[in-house]
Length: 620
Image (tube, rainbow, N blue to C red; front, side, top):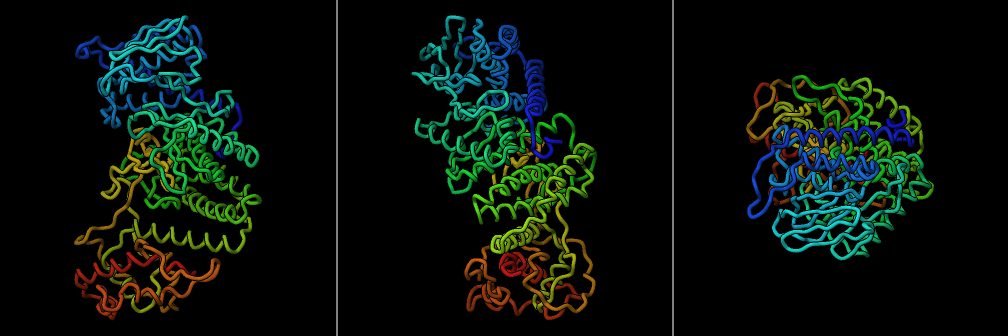
């Protein structure tokens, strides 16, 4: 299964493209069937063209020039609009912010107009447009010819050209729609063509380019567009020379690149959703290896999403809460869908960094070792999961087989040491954030910590269940994803994955697990007596609950073993004369037995365990 391991050929891309096109056509037909046909007139003007009339024009354009219609359907923003609208019409899903009930299905007129313009057929349409600017999918955006947040504009097109007019002016479209001109902004082509020969575009114009909301165009100067082109050209060239399989996946799956607004910082932020197959939202960075790894990650999400549209990868959950799992790349518990999508994406990233070790040295060694651990941890959980179909099981088996040679790859001492610290930190943080511990176990753990003894193994704690109070309603775009350490700033849940990114929008449901609130009691019962064990406090981070905070006592040269942080923790937690001074003395001097400690004692112990995990992780 080449798609399962991200090694796609032209025939694979053609199959996935065909499947996604079929889904889009079905969605457009559903819009036609489900949309109401009110005779309401917009105040002071005629009503917009009905969806049925727009569908007829679209059919005429397809008969005249099938390639013209295919080019319009190739724009991911069309699918993003269509699938969200279908859910809104069929299931009452709340539309994204900025969407207009007045526009709704009549935006099919924009799709028909773009197809007619490309095919050179005649059309006469009235379409509601945001801010008076007409969006022509796959082509670009006009200047404002209408007034108001949602204005009605007319389009007249034929062999002699196209005219767009509204209540504030008119515009004759240029013959060369790929070149910018007065009143016309085309989608900039990036110059990198996929197997279909169609180059990807930089989409900063489409109102439906972002699944979170309907947006106004993002103003990019010519210099900024040149910068994007240069960076993406270098990114694709690095993939072509370093990882040909990843290059084929990226050029085959990525149709448009959507710049993220307000995405400051040094890390690359990215997201993608199944609703907009082929679109990758990403921040700008001149770090070419990081950009390349980002595109590999998102392209893998796209491929697995398209595969899941052809054949189910997961067994439908009939009843009860959905099981959730530890995903090493996220702080929150993930459903099976999110775990598989993440493992599939990070397997591609791991393979990329493996091939970059000679060129990027210690950085690539670190990235390879870190992602290798993430993939191995996820595959171990997926191997025991019961919610996969036969096709989903084959994807996991193919990933495990392709990743097997990585486990024996040697990594230099310093990157390996840093990765070990990161892995322990991630495990401790996840346990601290998400496990629920009974009061009796909390008191027992507090006493053991006080006297310097390790906790029982396995450590007490129950992971939350998907759909519990701590998880209900939380969706994210992880592509699946979705897109987290890779989440865009202020990312809001959209609709698309039965997610996400759910991303739900379709794909990766998940959320943050929460422990019990103060005053709630968990299951009772004391812990079994522990045998005498030599204290190893520095290893508690792998077993104890509690969210980590900032690292403490981590001084020293890189690659050296930090000093004994377990000796500094009590002083840090209870500074002399500070607010917490003396509180250690109030911990029980003997393990809790038949008498339950006071509620404040239990809460205090829980707070102590919630603040020191990372500090204990600084030495193995």
